[in-house]
Length: 504
Image (tube, rainbow, N blue to C red; front, side):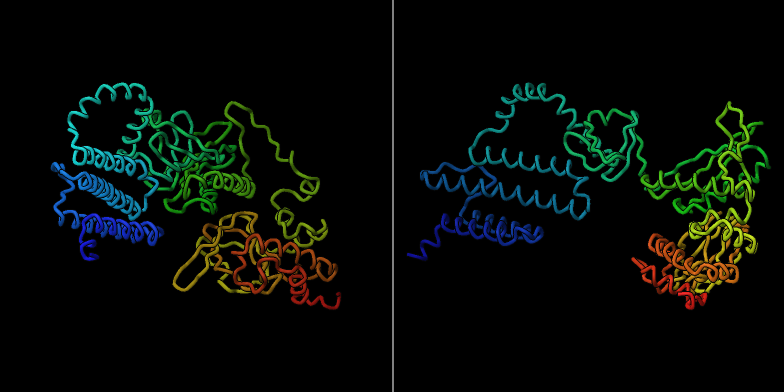
């Protein structure tokens, strides 16, 4: 009795369906690849079972006398077609995952899945219910026309989306700009629209039909790097080639732009009022453009100030000399471009009095370095703080067989404070990228100030702690705590180096 029951095709079919559902939908529901393998095994087993009992799922069923057998055959065929569609759909989704473009292929995936489901439904109608497919399609033509007219706008978006996905003028993650100045990063494309995330982090939804007709610029293609320009106007008080070389130094000293391809400077025009130059450069991606421009504007001011150049006004205006307009009384007393001004612009010495700054300025040592000269080797313990007066300096760190550029210094920047105040070695090799002029503040210059005012060690320690925390990559070789270094430990180190313990 039991053997006869197990040999019944209906019982075998039900057992197979229960086992297949339990394995693929419950045991392997969190394993995408495992679930696909389970679905394939179930589909093959179901096919073998049906063919073994003479049921051909892809052909119309012959007339049957038994209602039970007709019902079982119909249900078995429906389940076979549905599972066949699921296996094909799983293959499509797995292929997109292997391609690592699941969001970009969403529209294509939906289109293929829709075709698979439509084919399965038509096959079920023809093979299970024996309805002529050709007649059904012909009689639904009028309904399709009415539905198409009602959904004209939606269908336009759908077919435009298909055309955009086939043409691939952009991909998810690309930054695009439309002709109406709408721009943003593509975050999703679907049947209806394309979603952009603009610079203010707002979501912009553009219908595919509109996007297919408009002119767009893909700033991320063929590569992520983006080109930008800055226009500068300076008073024609020196040779144009000298100004162009200075502007090249501005680009060389910028840390936010790409070094390859090399940035360039072009002289656009010259007249009695101004020399106009165009600075061209590239950044890693579109999001770095504003950061790079801000840094370049800061470097333009510093390099021009160091070289004694003055900016010109907009075209058509008369430039009036105003070099003293923004100067403080102390600036006017000591004069522009002096060592005193270099000292006063360093945040490390912001707590010094005017007399203390004057003492440092009067004892500073001026030095010059030719292009490519090594100013200090990595791990060297400098006993002087060096301020860059003009030119560009590079700091590179050697790690094994690699050379890593940490930063570039421009006029007004300084190095050597870790050796002077903490007795630590330089984090990297300091090299002149151009002709460089520096001013040095040595230990013998700073020591009298600390002995006269021991509390200055506490002030310098507090300022150093803030700088180490903000620019820890430039103090990687020091043995101080970078994050949250106690001010007392830095102050104690300064006192120890300058032998100030007797003043505690």
